Amino acid sequence: MSCSYATTHFEAAASGHAEPCADEHARIKEYYRAVAQDFRAWSPKLNMHFGYWDLNINPMHREDMLERMNVEVLNRVDLPLTGPALLADLGCGAGATARTIAQRRVETTIDAVTVVMEQILQGAELSHAIGLRHKVKFRLADYTNTRLPAAQYDGVYALESACHARGADKRPLLRETFRLLKPGGRLVIVDAFLRTSRPLPRVIDRLYRSWCRNWVVSELAEISAIRAALADQGYTHVSIDDITWRIAPSALQIPFFATWFTARALWRARFKLDNWRIGHILASYASFLMGCWLPGFGYYVVTARKPA
Image 1 (cartoon, rainbow, N blue to C red):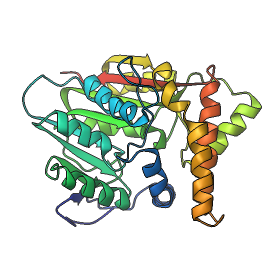
Image 2 (image 1 turned 180 degrees about the vertical axis):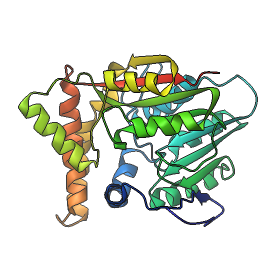
Image 3 (image 1 turned 90 degrees about the vertical axis):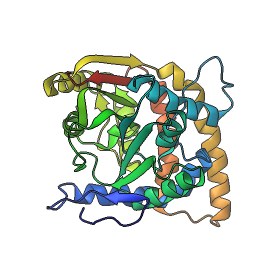
Image 4 (image 1 turned 180 degrees about the horizontal axis):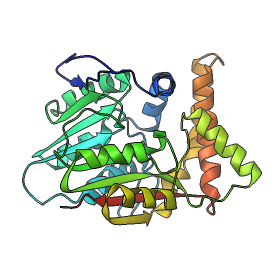
């Protein structure tokens, strides 16, 4: 994408060539534009992910679990206790995770990257409202080719956004994260993963393909493939933590939330929803059913360090 500074709230990373995934990016943008308000129904703070449950949280309080996931990302980045830090949020959505981190780490600045202009405008408004305008800096860019400065970031994370990168090993994304990190910096990826490279049962595979199509995901990362890709890229201290049961309380809310939301949306739209919103609702049900197929799918935190 090619544009200079557009507002005081965000910057666009300039590139001198056409995007190689222009059609795919166009679909992602169209999808997120169409369902922007649907995500606000899931989370007033626009946390566009599942929640992390622990014993201190009421499992019925979804927003508390969503915010707790943001804190978990910060904990896994493993910054020094004090001092300034620079983080990159790749696939930031409307910046909810970045805002949580900026509120907890007063000396930390986050470059929040997305290809969706509407998310930048939403995020900038929310950040400005709580005094984080200069701490969360939105960037309009492809997260596999951000044009951000190399070796400047203490940590890089992707919370439920790595799924949009290409390949079961997400190598284009991993190359960019390695380039961005300082020596000794840490990468954190939190997302749903395929547990195995073996073919899925036919019914599950059809469900999975429908989910990918409706949420504009080429394919989920596969655990063994991403482990190998991290090693090939040069990462060390790779850790892969299965937190499927931690997100279960928020995931269990999906069928009830989706049913309530569908009824409300249909009523408000006089029973006329566009294809993106219909697909989004169907994919919500599919994600719950996929999560029940534990041999095939799991939810993981992947961490790795760039060698010092």
